[in-house]
Image (cartoon, rainbow, N blue to C red; front, top):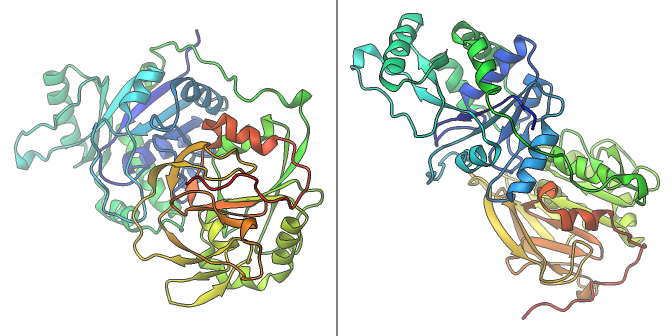
Length: 456
């Protein structure tokens, strides 16, 4: 049994994730040289990279809906190896309300994560205003400490700190000021734009004004936890293979656990840029194009004909491509943008992609493969979060053999063309050991079409 310093931060059910309070924690503790690993409680790769910019560690994901308890413990233990404190953010509301803002998804359920990982829990509660009376906020069951949000200065904080501690017998370990102009800016910040450093700095300074760092450190170390990092077996006795993954301004949304799982299976990871590179890296077995914002760079992507030709040649040689979300839209025949323009895509997958206005947050879905493919045999079940930014309209070159392309799911959200597979569903491969093993499995280059017939 070891003690991993860790806390659960229970935030309101509505709002952004990471919340303003969580960003204040991350910025303030990082300013004091704490290495903090932030975990979201929902495994969908939305956001603008703010967590990584603030802490220097990429944001990670846990998800009680997606991951069984042994996987949760393994991914958590692996994720905290470089950190002094793990901060898991989510909501204690067992029935989260739908979120009505398009750019962020609601926080996930925290209670099952707190139970699985035995997390000391800090509830983020709105601080009342003295002029509004003495209506104290509801304190959820099972919390160990209180953090006050949107306080109206030191006097307001001190008054309610004493009152809440007296009535609840729970310690109040800190607060953050209201700073309405900062919160408004955070709410309106587009998903594809990083948050200004000045705003993050103001939240961090406010956190440090009120935080009881000694109490936070002590609470995080109160519970030992038996976990192991065992996952995909070591690559020592495995076949080495080379994976080129798209990483530039247009693409780059990958779960850290996915890349680590591939490395553990023997992958050599190599970055490439669909915006700037004219060719794929040498001796590539698999190409991955993750989600991103190809709509913001559609003209430049379409003009890079050399890279598009390299991707097509890769498929024509019988090699594999895997894509998600925006990467899948790019691989289609065309992308129709918000202004109505239709920009040529890579022309590999058999559909046209249209960007949708005001898309809802990613949706949790369960899918069954209707055909055999290198991801798995027909009947394979996968779970993940479907991106709702794009609509895929099926269609293909009439000269193509109809058995060599089509949809892999009944819902038409995962497609294939030879051994290129792309869909709108974000898969957390760290939570899908059978699927990630298929990425590392032997794949002799071949244009043999999938052998399984559609499920009727």
